[in-house]
View 1 (cartoon, rainbow, N blue to C red):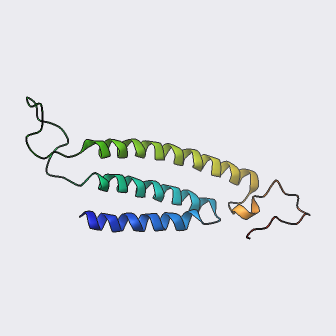
View 2 (tube, helix red, strand yellow; view 1 turned 60 degrees about the vertical axis):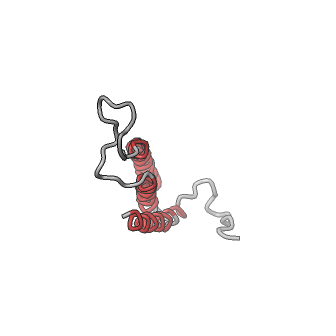
View 3 (cartoon, helix red, strand yellow; view 1 turned 120 degrees about the horizontal axis):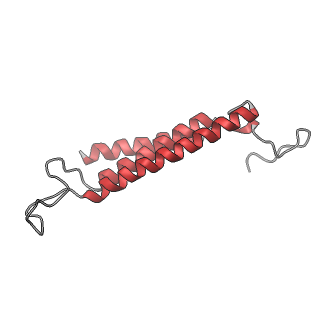
Length: 125
């Protein structure tokens, strides 16, 4: 199961990298969401997948008597989901406001600092 999830995480990272390199804000935002999901799956897979056992020590015992699931990746993923959602909400509002101001979501058309008559800065080296 870990091998399948490793392939899925790799695909998620590749899709996120592709979307983040786009010149449209919506695709960049979707790339950020896919990247956060890829990181969450990576953390979750790194903590080993054990469905059969709970992530806590039974009452009355001071140490586990058998295998237990690792609760740390689950807590990290839960926290990361909340943080990723809040960052996505902020970026979505920021992108919407930029779209309202500039009437475009294409990043090359969002060059306000450069005057229109001047030469554009080099786009590649």
